[in-house]
Length: 318
Ligand code: SAM
Image 1 (tube, rainbow, N blue to C red):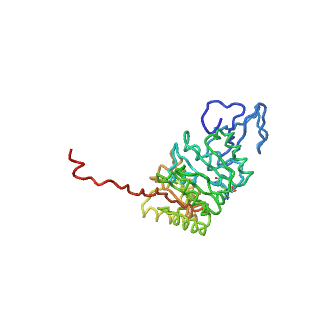
Image 2 (tube, rainbow, N blue to C red; image 1 turned 90 degrees about the horizontal axis):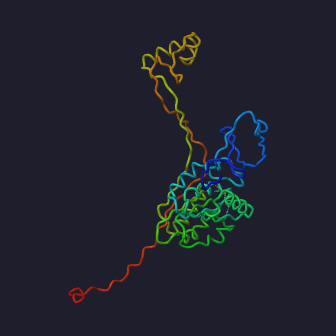
Image 3 (spheres, rainbow, N blue to C red; image 1 turned 60 degrees about the vertical axis):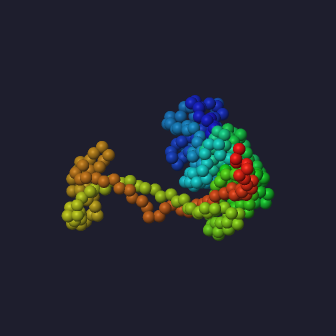
């Protein structure tokens, strides 16, 4: 099993994601006589309970991968992938590779004919990521280079459609990124920086190198809790409030429980006595800041107009 294709049966040597609960997953490689130890004990072929063995996907890998650095999570990954116009066949630069979280998603998006040029200047991280891509069947699609892209650039010219920079100083790599774009087409770049001061320096570099449509986003997750509410009119609500106050409780359900009144409910446990509405309740605050995403567009240089010879009367009259 690998990230580059699906198969029906699990075999020795396959990477699978062991799913025990949504917060308890772990990647393992299947071996002939292997045991899996976790907080429920040892799981082997005579284990009494059950677990799921899931086919690896980039989304699952992001949740279970060994962290060697901070990583990108799925909210930012999907946003960046879309805004960088990544699609099958695209040629993309990313730096740094880090723990390879984003690399797996990029590879799936640009497969089967695309190419990811991934750059990492930390030797151990570069070596481990390279081995992982190989083991996951992505070795041909991801070309990983151990290189300091701020000092030495990407070494690519007229090659890619999109560039993604998750670096402490992305502004130092903008000039080389510009040269790496396919020069006759528009291209997209995105930088991922936690501090606004980094964004300001990146925007200056993007402007200096004539990128256009410079726009910054922040991607926050807000969960929507859908809950049932009883629909009653104002006079009924007043009446209920009075009765609740007399009984010394804050809601009608508690009062009915105290009074021993059983509410008739439907299959979903909702009261059938009153009309119910499904409403979405959102928390006031969205979950914390990860980084600012700065996007910009590379435009091909306008071609010098070619001098056309003047057409004289003599040449058009045959
Ligand atoms: N996006 C990655 C992921 O989803 O797993 C995480 C990237 S991690 C936050 C940043 C990486 O950039 C680190 O591994 C670091 O070693 C690398 N890095 C920093 N400066 C670099 C440079 N000048 N050239 C290449 N890699 C660099």
